[in-house]
Image 1 (cartoon, rainbow, N blue to C red):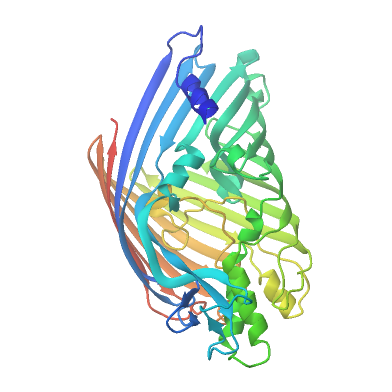
Image 2: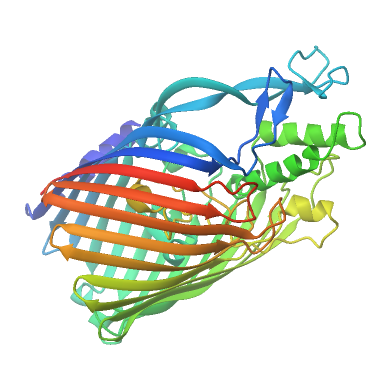
Length: 523
Protein backbone atom coordinates (compact mmCIF):
# COMPACT_ATOMS: atom_id res chain seq x y z
CA UNK A 1 0.00 0.00 0.00
CA UNK A 2 2.76 2.47 0.95
CA UNK A 3 4.66 1.71 -2.25
CA UNK A 4 1.56 2.27 -4.36
CA UNK A 5 0.85 5.64 -2.73
CA UNK A 6 4.46 6.70 -3.22
CA UNK A 7 4.31 5.75 -6.88
CA UNK A 8 1.15 7.80 -7.35
CA UNK A 9 2.73 10.80 -5.67
CA UNK A 10 5.71 10.59 -8.03
CA UNK A 11 3.41 10.36 -11.03
CA UNK A 12 1.41 13.38 -9.92
CA UNK A 13 4.46 15.65 -9.84
CA UNK A 14 6.68 16.80 -12.73
CA UNK A 15 9.77 14.60 -13.09
CA UNK A 16 12.98 15.97 -11.53
CA UNK A 17 14.78 18.32 -13.85
CA UNK A 18 11.81 18.77 -16.16
CA UNK A 19 10.35 22.16 -16.86
CA UNK A 20 6.91 22.90 -15.41
CA UNK A 21 5.31 22.04 -18.74
CA UNK A 22 1.54 21.87 -19.03
CA UNK A 23 -0.67 20.24 -16.41
CA UNK A 24 -4.40 19.93 -17.02
CA UNK A 25 -7.00 19.17 -14.36
CA UNK A 26 -10.43 17.69 -15.01
CA UNK A 27 -13.10 16.75 -12.50
CA UNK A 28 -16.67 15.56 -12.88
CA UNK A 29 -19.66 14.33 -10.91
CA UNK A 30 -22.31 12.23 -12.64
CA UNK A 31 -25.67 11.82 -10.89
CA UNK A 32 -28.24 9.26 -12.05
CA UNK A 33 -31.77 8.30 -11.08
CA UNK A 34 -32.67 4.96 -12.69
CA UNK A 35 -35.91 3.00 -12.91
CA UNK A 36 -35.93 -0.53 -14.36
CA UNK A 37 -39.01 -2.58 -15.14
CA UNK A 38 -39.54 -6.10 -16.41
CA UNK A 39 -35.88 -7.12 -16.23
CA UNK A 40 -35.59 -10.91 -16.84
CA UNK A 41 -34.44 -12.77 -13.76
CA UNK A 42 -31.21 -14.72 -14.23
CA UNK A 43 -30.47 -15.49 -10.57
CA UNK A 44 -31.73 -18.51 -8.64
CA UNK A 45 -32.81 -17.97 -5.02
CA UNK A 46 -33.80 -20.39 -2.24
CA UNK A 47 -37.04 -19.74 -0.34
CA UNK A 48 -36.47 -20.87 3.29
CA UNK A 49 -40.20 -20.84 4.09
CA UNK A 50 -41.08 -23.13 1.17
CA UNK A 51 -37.81 -25.08 1.51
CA UNK A 52 -37.47 -24.92 -2.27
CA UNK A 53 -35.76 -22.93 -5.02
CA UNK A 54 -37.77 -20.25 -6.80
CA UNK A 55 -37.55 -21.43 -10.41
CA UNK A 56 -40.76 -19.98 -11.87
CA UNK A 57 -39.25 -16.54 -12.55
CA UNK A 58 -36.13 -17.71 -14.37
CA UNK A 59 -35.61 -15.62 -17.55
CA UNK A 60 -39.09 -14.16 -17.09
CA UNK A 61 -39.38 -10.34 -17.50
CA UNK A 62 -40.93 -9.33 -14.19
CA UNK A 63 -38.31 -7.66 -11.98
CA UNK A 64 -38.52 -3.99 -10.91
CA UNK A 65 -35.90 -1.71 -9.39
CA UNK A 66 -35.33 1.99 -8.68
CA UNK A 67 -32.15 3.56 -7.38
CA UNK A 68 -29.98 6.64 -7.37
CA UNK A 69 -26.27 6.50 -8.10
CA UNK A 70 -23.18 8.69 -8.33
CA UNK A 71 -19.84 8.59 -10.09
CA UNK A 72 -17.16 11.14 -9.17
CA UNK A 73 -14.02 11.42 -11.29
CA UNK A 74 -10.74 13.32 -11.06
CA UNK A 75 -7.99 13.47 -13.69
CA UNK A 76 -4.57 15.10 -14.03
CA UNK A 77 -2.62 15.10 -17.30
CA UNK A 78 0.90 16.46 -17.62
CA UNK A 79 3.06 17.19 -20.67
CA UNK A 80 6.75 18.06 -20.47
CA UNK A 81 9.75 18.47 -22.78
CA UNK A 82 7.57 19.60 -25.71
CA UNK A 83 5.22 16.69 -25.18
CA UNK A 84 7.88 13.98 -25.30
CA UNK A 85 7.17 13.10 -21.66
CA UNK A 86 3.56 12.68 -20.55
CA UNK A 87 1.88 11.33 -17.43
CA UNK A 88 -1.67 10.70 -16.29
CA UNK A 89 -3.33 10.19 -12.92
CA UNK A 90 -7.05 9.43 -12.99
CA UNK A 91 -9.32 8.36 -10.16
CA UNK A 92 -13.03 7.64 -10.03
CA UNK A 93 -15.41 6.07 -7.58
CA UNK A 94 -17.17 3.83 -10.05
CA UNK A 95 -20.95 3.69 -9.72
CA UNK A 96 -21.73 4.26 -6.04
CA UNK A 97 -25.20 3.22 -4.91
CA UNK A 98 -27.06 1.51 -2.09
CA UNK A 99 -27.34 -2.18 -2.91
CA UNK A 100 -28.96 -5.03 -1.05
CA UNK A 101 -27.33 -8.39 -1.62
CA UNK A 102 -29.41 -11.51 -0.89
CA UNK A 103 -28.77 -13.15 2.45
CA UNK A 104 -27.11 -16.57 2.33
CA UNK A 105 -28.72 -19.65 3.84
CA UNK A 106 -27.28 -23.15 4.42
CA UNK A 107 -29.21 -25.77 2.42
CA UNK A 108 -28.80 -29.54 2.39
CA UNK A 109 -30.51 -32.48 0.75
CA UNK A 110 -33.09 -34.22 2.93
CA UNK A 111 -35.14 -37.31 2.10
CA UNK A 112 -37.51 -36.37 4.94
CA UNK A 113 -38.40 -33.02 3.39
CA UNK A 114 -41.31 -33.01 0.87
CA UNK A 115 -39.28 -30.73 -1.41
CA UNK A 116 -36.03 -32.67 -1.10
CA UNK A 117 -34.30 -29.66 0.53
CA UNK A 118 -34.00 -28.46 4.09
CA UNK A 119 -32.28 -25.76 6.13
CA UNK A 120 -32.17 -27.79 9.33
CA UNK A 121 -29.09 -29.77 8.41
CA UNK A 122 -27.86 -32.47 10.74
CA UNK A 123 -24.20 -32.93 11.73
CA UNK A 124 -23.68 -35.58 9.03
CA UNK A 125 -25.42 -33.67 6.21
CA UNK A 126 -23.38 -31.51 3.85
CA UNK A 127 -24.63 -27.93 3.93
CA UNK A 128 -24.27 -25.59 0.93
CA UNK A 129 -24.43 -21.78 1.43
CA UNK A 130 -26.67 -20.43 -1.34
CA UNK A 131 -28.42 -17.07 -1.98
CA UNK A 132 -31.90 -16.83 -0.50
CA UNK A 133 -35.01 -14.82 -1.24
CA UNK A 134 -34.44 -12.85 1.97
CA UNK A 135 -32.75 -9.53 1.35
CA UNK A 136 -29.50 -8.83 3.13
CA UNK A 137 -28.28 -5.62 4.67
CA UNK A 138 -28.24 -2.57 2.39
CA UNK A 139 -24.77 -1.08 1.99
CA UNK A 140 -22.85 1.21 -0.30
CA UNK A 141 -21.42 -0.53 -3.35
CA UNK A 142 -18.98 0.68 -5.99
CA UNK A 143 -18.42 -1.12 -9.27
CA UNK A 144 -20.77 -3.85 -8.10
CA UNK A 145 -18.98 -4.71 -4.84
CA UNK A 146 -18.81 -3.20 -1.32
CA UNK A 147 -17.26 0.26 -1.36
CA UNK A 148 -14.61 -0.64 1.22
CA UNK A 149 -13.52 -3.65 -0.83
CA UNK A 150 -13.27 -1.53 -3.99
CA UNK A 151 -11.13 1.06 -2.20
CA UNK A 152 -8.79 -1.58 -0.76
CA UNK A 153 -8.41 -3.37 -4.08
CA UNK A 154 -7.93 -0.35 -6.38
CA UNK A 155 -7.46 2.82 -4.27
CA UNK A 156 -10.01 4.10 -6.83
CA UNK A 157 -7.10 4.61 -9.24
CA UNK A 158 -8.03 3.93 -12.87
CA UNK A 159 -4.97 5.39 -14.60
CA UNK A 160 -1.46 6.07 -13.29
CA UNK A 161 0.94 5.93 -16.20
CA UNK A 162 3.96 7.59 -17.77
CA UNK A 163 4.58 7.77 -21.55
CA UNK A 164 7.87 8.73 -23.16
CA UNK A 165 8.35 9.42 -26.88
CA UNK A 166 11.89 9.07 -28.18
CA UNK A 167 13.93 8.36 -31.30
CA UNK A 168 13.88 10.25 -34.59
CA UNK A 169 10.86 12.59 -34.67
CA UNK A 170 9.64 10.83 -31.52
CA UNK A 171 8.49 7.82 -33.56
CA UNK A 172 8.72 5.42 -30.59
CA UNK A 173 6.50 5.72 -27.51
CA UNK A 174 6.90 3.60 -24.40
CA UNK A 175 4.06 3.65 -21.85
CA UNK A 176 4.06 1.94 -18.46
CA UNK A 177 1.70 1.85 -15.48
CA UNK A 178 -2.05 1.63 -15.21
CA UNK A 179 -3.88 2.65 -18.42
CA UNK A 180 -6.88 1.78 -20.51
CA UNK A 181 -6.21 -1.13 -22.87
CA UNK A 182 -8.52 -2.13 -25.73
CA UNK A 183 -8.32 -5.34 -27.76
CA UNK A 184 -10.48 -5.85 -30.87
CA UNK A 185 -12.25 -2.51 -30.27
CA UNK A 186 -13.73 -3.78 -27.02
CA UNK A 187 -14.94 -7.16 -28.29
CA UNK A 188 -12.17 -8.89 -26.32
CA UNK A 189 -11.13 -6.30 -23.74
CA UNK A 190 -11.62 -2.61 -22.98
CA UNK A 191 -10.84 -1.62 -19.42
CA UNK A 192 -8.20 -0.21 -17.10
CA UNK A 193 -5.25 -2.51 -16.46
CA UNK A 194 -1.61 -2.46 -15.36
CA UNK A 195 1.03 -3.10 -17.99
CA UNK A 196 3.41 -1.68 -20.56
CA UNK A 197 3.27 -1.14 -24.30
CA UNK A 198 5.55 0.08 -27.07
CA UNK A 199 4.20 1.88 -30.15
CA UNK A 200 6.29 2.64 -33.24
CA UNK A 201 4.89 5.30 -35.60
CA UNK A 202 6.86 4.52 -38.72
CA UNK A 203 5.02 7.32 -40.52
CA UNK A 204 7.38 9.73 -38.79
CA UNK A 205 10.21 8.01 -40.71
CA UNK A 206 8.45 7.37 -44.01
CA UNK A 207 6.03 4.41 -44.43
CA UNK A 208 2.48 5.09 -43.11
CA UNK A 209 2.55 2.23 -40.62
CA UNK A 210 2.21 1.86 -36.87
CA UNK A 211 3.37 -1.16 -34.87
CA UNK A 212 2.40 -1.87 -31.27
CA UNK A 213 3.14 -4.52 -28.67
CA UNK A 214 1.64 -4.62 -25.17
CA UNK A 215 1.61 -6.83 -22.09
CA UNK A 216 -0.94 -6.11 -19.34
CA UNK A 217 -2.71 -7.70 -16.37
CA UNK A 218 -6.47 -7.68 -17.16
CA UNK A 219 -7.84 -6.46 -13.82
CA UNK A 220 -8.74 -3.14 -12.23
CA UNK A 221 -7.32 -4.46 -8.96
CA UNK A 222 -3.66 -3.99 -8.27
CA UNK A 223 -2.02 -7.17 -9.65
CA UNK A 224 -0.52 -8.16 -6.29
CA UNK A 225 -4.03 -8.45 -4.82
CA UNK A 226 -5.20 -11.07 -7.34
CA UNK A 227 -3.90 -14.62 -6.98
CA UNK A 228 -2.57 -16.32 -10.07
CA UNK A 229 -3.58 -13.67 -12.58
CA UNK A 230 -1.93 -14.05 -15.96
CA UNK A 231 -1.24 -11.27 -18.48
CA UNK A 232 -2.64 -10.62 -21.93
CA UNK A 233 -0.10 -10.24 -24.74
CA UNK A 234 -1.12 -8.03 -27.68
CA UNK A 235 0.54 -7.20 -31.00
CA UNK A 236 -0.93 -4.95 -33.68
CA UNK A 237 0.08 -3.48 -37.06
CA UNK A 238 -1.85 -0.61 -38.70
CA UNK A 239 -1.80 1.13 -42.05
CA UNK A 240 -2.46 4.88 -41.67
CA UNK A 241 -3.62 6.32 -45.01
CA UNK A 242 -4.49 9.66 -43.38
CA UNK A 243 -4.55 11.37 -40.02
CA UNK A 244 -8.10 10.14 -39.32
CA UNK A 245 -7.95 6.65 -40.85
CA UNK A 246 -6.43 3.33 -39.93
CA UNK A 247 -6.75 -0.33 -40.89
CA UNK A 248 -4.76 -3.18 -39.46
CA UNK A 249 -4.44 -6.64 -38.00
CA UNK A 250 -4.01 -7.79 -34.40
CA UNK A 251 -3.33 -10.89 -32.34
CA UNK A 252 -3.68 -11.46 -28.60
CA UNK A 253 -3.17 -14.40 -26.26
CA UNK A 254 -3.75 -15.32 -22.63
CA UNK A 255 -3.31 -18.30 -20.34
CA UNK A 256 -5.77 -18.06 -17.47
CA UNK A 257 -5.33 -19.90 -14.18
CA UNK A 258 -7.64 -17.74 -12.05
CA UNK A 259 -10.99 -19.28 -12.97
CA UNK A 260 -12.23 -16.03 -14.54
CA UNK A 261 -12.99 -17.74 -17.86
CA UNK A 262 -14.94 -20.47 -16.07
CA UNK A 263 -16.92 -17.69 -14.35
CA UNK A 264 -18.29 -16.81 -17.81
CA UNK A 265 -20.20 -20.09 -17.72
CA UNK A 266 -21.72 -19.66 -14.25
CA UNK A 267 -25.05 -18.52 -15.70
CA UNK A 268 -25.02 -21.38 -18.19
CA UNK A 269 -24.39 -23.94 -15.42
CA UNK A 270 -27.26 -22.46 -13.42
CA UNK A 271 -29.55 -22.56 -16.46
CA UNK A 272 -28.75 -26.21 -17.14
CA UNK A 273 -29.46 -27.15 -13.52
CA UNK A 274 -32.67 -25.10 -13.35
CA UNK A 275 -34.09 -26.58 -16.55
CA UNK A 276 -33.38 -30.13 -15.36
CA UNK A 277 -34.67 -29.59 -11.82
CA UNK A 278 -37.87 -27.87 -13.00
CA UNK A 279 -38.88 -31.06 -14.79
CA UNK A 280 -38.35 -33.35 -11.78
CA UNK A 281 -40.08 -33.98 -8.46
CA UNK A 282 -38.60 -35.32 -5.21
CA UNK A 283 -38.27 -39.07 -5.39
CA UNK A 284 -38.03 -39.21 -9.17
CA UNK A 285 -34.88 -40.74 -10.69
CA UNK A 286 -32.22 -38.10 -11.09
CA UNK A 287 -33.78 -35.57 -8.69
CA UNK A 288 -31.22 -35.96 -5.89
CA UNK A 289 -28.23 -35.80 -8.27
CA UNK A 290 -29.59 -32.73 -10.08
CA UNK A 291 -30.46 -31.02 -6.78
CA UNK A 292 -26.95 -31.61 -5.44
CA UNK A 293 -25.54 -30.33 -8.71
CA UNK A 294 -27.55 -27.08 -8.41
CA UNK A 295 -26.34 -26.64 -4.83
CA UNK A 296 -22.73 -27.05 -5.93
CA UNK A 297 -23.14 -24.56 -8.78
CA UNK A 298 -24.70 -21.89 -6.55
CA UNK A 299 -22.37 -22.29 -3.59
CA UNK A 300 -18.96 -22.23 -5.28
CA UNK A 301 -17.34 -20.28 -8.07
CA UNK A 302 -16.43 -22.31 -11.17
CA UNK A 303 -12.77 -23.10 -11.64
CA UNK A 304 -10.94 -23.96 -14.84
CA UNK A 305 -7.70 -23.44 -16.71
CA UNK A 306 -7.95 -21.76 -20.09
CA UNK A 307 -5.78 -20.96 -23.07
CA UNK A 308 -7.23 -18.26 -25.32
CA UNK A 309 -5.99 -16.86 -28.64
CA UNK A 310 -7.57 -14.10 -30.72
CA UNK A 311 -6.68 -12.76 -34.16
CA UNK A 312 -8.43 -10.40 -36.52
CA UNK A 313 -8.59 -7.11 -38.37
CA UNK A 314 -10.14 -3.74 -37.63
CA UNK A 315 -10.16 -0.26 -39.01
CA UNK A 316 -11.91 3.06 -39.55
CA UNK A 317 -11.86 4.47 -43.08
CA UNK A 318 -13.34 7.44 -44.99
CA UNK A 319 -14.36 6.03 -48.41
CA UNK A 320 -16.15 9.25 -49.45
CA UNK A 321 -16.94 12.70 -48.12
CA UNK A 322 -19.43 12.45 -45.26
CA UNK A 323 -19.01 8.68 -44.91
CA UNK A 324 -17.07 6.61 -42.38
CA UNK A 325 -16.87 2.82 -42.23
CA UNK A 326 -15.61 1.15 -39.05
CA UNK A 327 -15.19 -2.62 -38.78
CA UNK A 328 -13.82 -5.30 -36.48
CA UNK A 329 -13.59 -9.00 -37.31
CA UNK A 330 -12.06 -11.56 -34.95
CA UNK A 331 -11.56 -15.29 -34.55
CA UNK A 332 -10.94 -16.98 -31.20
CA UNK A 333 -9.38 -20.34 -30.46
CA UNK A 334 -8.41 -22.07 -27.24
CA UNK A 335 -9.22 -24.77 -24.72
CA UNK A 336 -10.86 -25.04 -21.31
CA UNK A 337 -9.59 -27.68 -18.90
CA UNK A 338 -11.16 -28.87 -15.63
CA UNK A 339 -14.27 -26.78 -16.20
CA UNK A 340 -16.45 -28.60 -13.67
CA UNK A 341 -18.47 -31.74 -13.09
CA UNK A 342 -21.66 -33.35 -14.32
CA UNK A 343 -24.69 -33.78 -12.02
CA UNK A 344 -23.35 -37.25 -11.24
CA UNK A 345 -20.09 -35.69 -10.06
CA UNK A 346 -17.98 -36.87 -13.01
CA UNK A 347 -15.49 -34.36 -14.44
CA UNK A 348 -16.46 -32.65 -17.68
CA UNK A 349 -14.11 -33.33 -20.60
CA UNK A 350 -11.80 -30.62 -21.87
CA UNK A 351 -13.64 -28.10 -24.05
CA UNK A 352 -12.13 -26.89 -27.35
CA UNK A 353 -13.02 -23.24 -28.01
CA UNK A 354 -13.87 -21.74 -31.41
CA UNK A 355 -15.49 -18.30 -31.63
CA UNK A 356 -16.25 -15.61 -34.20
CA UNK A 357 -17.13 -11.93 -33.90
CA UNK A 358 -17.98 -9.16 -36.36
CA UNK A 359 -18.85 -5.52 -35.84
CA UNK A 360 -19.55 -3.09 -38.70
CA UNK A 361 -20.69 0.54 -38.55
CA UNK A 362 -21.31 2.83 -41.54
CA UNK A 363 -21.83 6.46 -40.53
CA UNK A 364 -23.33 8.88 -43.05
CA UNK A 365 -23.20 12.61 -42.23
CA UNK A 366 -25.35 14.47 -44.78
CA UNK A 367 -25.09 17.66 -42.69
CA UNK A 368 -23.16 18.92 -39.65
CA UNK A 369 -26.19 18.32 -37.41
CA UNK A 370 -27.21 14.83 -38.58
CA UNK A 371 -25.55 11.39 -38.52
CA UNK A 372 -27.22 8.16 -39.64
CA UNK A 373 -25.46 4.91 -38.73
CA UNK A 374 -26.65 1.44 -39.72
CA UNK A 375 -24.67 -1.20 -37.84
CA UNK A 376 -24.32 -4.93 -37.30
CA UNK A 377 -22.94 -6.83 -34.31
CA UNK A 378 -22.40 -10.59 -34.29
CA UNK A 379 -20.96 -12.67 -31.46
CA UNK A 380 -21.08 -16.41 -32.05
CA UNK A 381 -22.79 -18.53 -29.41
CA UNK A 382 -23.48 -22.15 -28.56
CA UNK A 383 -25.11 -24.44 -26.07
CA UNK A 384 -23.16 -24.49 -22.80
CA UNK A 385 -20.59 -27.29 -22.38
CA UNK A 386 -22.52 -28.95 -19.53
CA UNK A 387 -25.71 -29.11 -21.58
CA UNK A 388 -23.89 -30.48 -24.65
CA UNK A 389 -22.31 -33.19 -22.49
CA UNK A 390 -25.69 -34.14 -21.01
CA UNK A 391 -27.26 -34.39 -24.49
CA UNK A 392 -24.36 -36.44 -25.85
CA UNK A 393 -23.30 -33.74 -28.33
CA UNK A 394 -19.66 -33.36 -29.43
CA UNK A 395 -17.48 -31.48 -26.96
CA UNK A 396 -16.60 -27.93 -27.87
CA UNK A 397 -17.94 -24.44 -27.38
CA UNK A 398 -18.37 -22.15 -30.39
CA UNK A 399 -19.20 -18.92 -28.57
CA UNK A 400 -16.92 -15.88 -28.72
CA UNK A 401 -15.31 -15.34 -25.31
CA UNK A 402 -13.56 -12.12 -24.33
CA UNK A 403 -11.48 -11.18 -21.30
CA UNK A 404 -13.43 -8.10 -20.24
CA UNK A 405 -15.52 -7.02 -23.24
CA UNK A 406 -17.13 -3.59 -23.32
CA UNK A 407 -20.06 -3.23 -25.71
CA UNK A 408 -22.55 -0.38 -25.70
CA UNK A 409 -24.45 -1.04 -28.94
CA UNK A 410 -27.85 -0.67 -27.19
CA UNK A 411 -28.85 0.67 -23.79
CA UNK A 412 -30.75 -2.27 -22.31
CA UNK A 413 -29.34 -5.48 -23.76
CA UNK A 414 -25.75 -4.22 -23.87
CA UNK A 415 -25.79 -1.61 -21.07
CA UNK A 416 -24.99 1.49 -23.12
CA UNK A 417 -26.59 4.92 -22.90
CA UNK A 418 -26.22 7.55 -20.18
CA UNK A 419 -24.82 5.04 -17.68
CA UNK A 420 -22.37 3.20 -19.92
CA UNK A 421 -19.41 4.89 -18.18
CA UNK A 422 -20.76 3.45 -14.91
CA UNK A 423 -20.25 -0.12 -16.08
CA UNK A 424 -18.00 -2.32 -13.97
CA UNK A 425 -17.06 -4.08 -17.24
CA UNK A 426 -17.19 -7.57 -15.83
CA UNK A 427 -16.41 -10.58 -17.96
CA UNK A 428 -19.55 -11.93 -19.60
CA UNK A 429 -20.35 -14.68 -22.07
CA UNK A 430 -21.82 -13.64 -25.44
CA UNK A 431 -25.56 -13.01 -25.35
CA UNK A 432 -27.60 -14.61 -22.57
CA UNK A 433 -25.79 -17.56 -20.94
CA UNK A 434 -23.38 -17.83 -23.87
CA UNK A 435 -26.05 -18.31 -26.57
CA UNK A 436 -24.48 -15.57 -28.75
CA UNK A 437 -26.14 -12.59 -30.41
CA UNK A 438 -26.86 -11.29 -33.90
CA UNK A 439 -27.99 -7.66 -33.83
CA UNK A 440 -28.62 -5.45 -36.86
CA UNK A 441 -29.47 -1.90 -35.83
CA UNK A 442 -29.84 1.74 -36.80
CA UNK A 443 -28.66 4.84 -34.95
CA UNK A 444 -29.69 8.43 -35.69
CA UNK A 445 -27.90 11.34 -33.97
CA UNK A 446 -29.24 14.90 -34.15
CA UNK A 447 -27.61 18.13 -32.95
CA UNK A 448 -30.39 20.67 -33.69
CA UNK A 449 -28.76 23.35 -31.53
CA UNK A 450 -25.31 23.97 -30.11
CA UNK A 451 -26.25 22.78 -26.62
CA UNK A 452 -28.75 20.05 -27.57
CA UNK A 453 -28.05 16.45 -28.65
CA UNK A 454 -30.62 13.78 -29.49
CA UNK A 455 -29.98 10.10 -30.14
CA UNK A 456 -32.27 7.28 -31.25
CA UNK A 457 -31.35 3.61 -31.60
CA UNK A 458 -33.33 0.60 -32.75
CA UNK A 459 -32.07 -2.98 -32.96
CA UNK A 460 -33.38 -6.50 -33.50
CA UNK A 461 -31.61 -9.06 -31.32
CA UNK A 462 -31.41 -12.80 -31.90
CA UNK A 463 -29.48 -15.67 -30.31
CA UNK A 464 -27.47 -18.14 -32.38
CA UNK A 465 -28.73 -21.08 -30.32
CA UNK A 466 -32.13 -21.69 -28.74
CA UNK A 467 -32.63 -20.86 -25.07
CA UNK A 468 -34.30 -22.94 -22.34
CA UNK A 469 -37.78 -21.98 -23.60
CA UNK A 470 -36.97 -23.12 -27.14
CA UNK A 471 -36.82 -19.69 -28.82
CA UNK A 472 -33.97 -17.71 -30.35
CA UNK A 473 -35.31 -14.15 -30.55
CA UNK A 474 -34.24 -11.87 -27.71
CA UNK A 475 -36.52 -9.12 -28.99
CA UNK A 476 -36.58 -5.61 -30.47
CA UNK A 477 -35.08 -2.68 -28.58
CA UNK A 478 -35.73 1.05 -28.96
CA UNK A 479 -33.58 3.64 -27.14
CA UNK A 480 -34.11 7.41 -26.97
CA UNK A 481 -31.69 9.86 -25.35
CA UNK A 482 -31.78 13.67 -25.04
CA UNK A 483 -29.00 15.86 -23.66
CA UNK A 484 -28.95 19.61 -22.97
CA UNK A 485 -25.87 21.58 -21.86
CA UNK A 486 -27.06 25.03 -20.72
CA UNK A 487 -23.60 25.82 -19.31
CA UNK A 488 -20.11 24.51 -20.07
CA UNK A 489 -20.02 22.96 -16.59
CA UNK A 490 -23.57 21.55 -16.55
CA UNK A 491 -25.41 18.93 -18.62
CA UNK A 492 -28.93 17.59 -18.12
CA UNK A 493 -30.07 14.41 -19.84
CA UNK A 494 -32.90 11.91 -20.00
CA UNK A 495 -33.11 8.40 -21.41
CA UNK A 496 -35.98 6.05 -22.16
CA UNK A 497 -35.49 2.49 -23.40
CA UNK A 498 -37.80 -0.42 -24.11
CA UNK A 499 -37.15 -4.02 -25.17
CA UNK A 500 -40.08 -6.04 -26.46
CA UNK A 501 -39.04 -9.62 -25.55
CA UNK A 502 -39.09 -12.44 -28.05
CA UNK A 503 -39.54 -16.18 -27.60
CA UNK A 504 -36.12 -16.64 -25.96
CA UNK A 505 -37.62 -15.43 -22.67
CA UNK A 506 -40.44 -16.91 -20.61
CA UNK A 507 -42.81 -13.96 -20.95
CA UNK A 508 -43.78 -11.06 -23.19
CA UNK A 509 -43.81 -8.18 -20.71
CA UNK A 510 -41.79 -5.24 -22.01
CA UNK A 511 -38.43 -4.52 -20.38
CA UNK A 512 -38.01 -0.80 -19.69
CA UNK A 513 -35.42 1.62 -18.37
CA UNK A 514 -35.70 5.33 -17.62
CA UNK A 515 -32.84 7.57 -16.48
CA UNK A 516 -32.62 11.17 -15.37
CA UNK A 517 -29.04 12.48 -15.37
CA UNK A 518 -27.13 15.52 -14.13
CA UNK A 519 -23.45 15.94 -15.04
CA UNK A 520 -21.22 18.54 -13.38
CA UNK A 521 -17.96 19.11 -15.24
CA UNK A 522 -14.92 21.34 -15.01
CA UNK A 523 -15.16 23.97 -17.80
